[in-house]
Image (cartoon, rainbow, N blue to C red; front, side, top):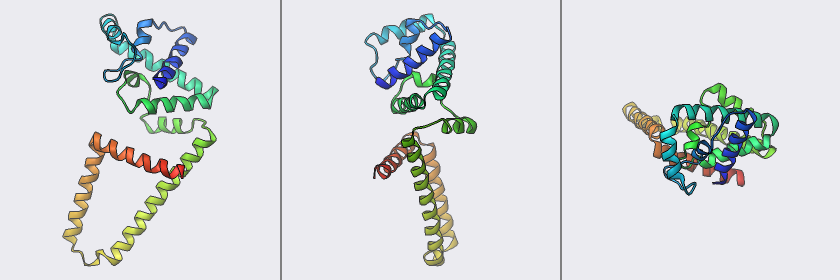
Length: 199
């Protein structure tokens, strides 16, 4: 709830700065979630909103405000920009309407722009250490495969190698496209990296 309140406050402040009307009902819908509790009268707010507002127009308006607010905060306060990222990461674990409207980078250019946003010294060190761990794991895998190809796989028939490659490809494809599995794998990798960083 603290994460949601922070994002809502930034969006509401940006609306006030830009003189964009944002009614109490529109502000209330920023707290909407079908699965997780938010405001006590959320059901009534959602019902009134559905009858009085156009979803698409509302989402476009909030998306513009959120993007503008984040860009402003990124320029004026790296610490506030860091809180944006933290709040979004917290809410991404659950189903919240506000995430539909907040602009999350998708193209390569947008991702680089977000990565180049000024960060705290602690975040920079974490990013560098994570990159080093990923590179080390990649190099270790290459060395291990090279060694195995010269010492273990020399007597393995080509048909068995091809079958193993197809099975590995199918497994990677399944992990990439299965939401639940990829989330579990992502969470597991995240925990591993977090423990390495903490250590």
